[in-house]
Length: 322
Ligand SMILES: [Zn+2]
Image 1 (tube, rainbow, N blue to C red):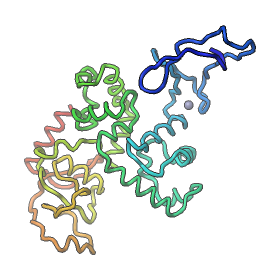
Image 2 (cartoon, rainbow, N blue to C red; image 1 turned 90 degrees about the horizontal axis):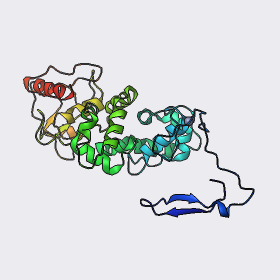
Image 3 (cartoon, helix red, strand yellow; image 1 turned 90 degrees about the vertical axis):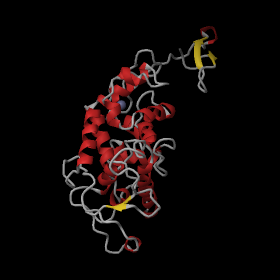
Image 4 (cartoon, rainbow, N blue to C red; image 1 turned 180 degrees about the vertical axis):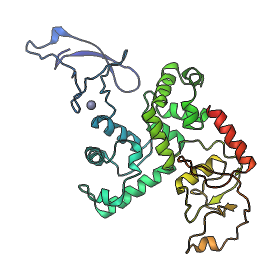
């Protein structure tokens, strides 16, 4: 193939046509042959061409170009939909080493963003709001946003209807993943390889701690000691962050405190009400004399003594994982 070649194309897939062959009889005598880069133009790592694929890729996971693509995909409309996190801003964040993975976005603060080019108080405010809002996105969008090879929107949705958490997905062998309708062996293999990577597992734990939906909402209606309860959280806990508490409560069947508009049916008695919370002071809460369940943070700090019902739930979860 030479630059300026006349080629034969055919319709392939949805949009992008496939080049079938060049027509050398129509080639100019001084045409320059095309040369694919042997090294990544950004980080100079030798590129790889996976078997059976037309594209070459940079295999370096910390290549700035690779990280930028990953963050742009994470923020895109069909993934976590973070408005205002465009290409130029991602370029700055990655170049300054402020963002190396999606979880880093949730650790950005106002002073850091204010120091960036073309970022005023208002745009910083809007961006932080959009990043915080993206924590409400469901598990299917999070899975899609991870950018695992072959996992598009439809595949992500399909996988999340069967696998209600990243841990279940990570502990399932590829052959079993491939039994899900619409999931072929190639996709199953890509998913299994991705989740087996210790760096990726660390990222999933980080996202979980930051309060992102790495679990489905499916167990909510019937399972868990808090099934059917709507909880409200206020004040602070000495041993657990708010996001850890919310994630733990959701997994035990409680309706999301963040999405509940109605009067809560229970409240977390270990959390004293905030001093000026008139909305809460107007409601009478049933007293909750013994803990209905315990939530242990990923750092193994115990919040409350486990009750028998919660203990059995935990055992079930552990069995499912093991
Ligand atoms: Zn590279």
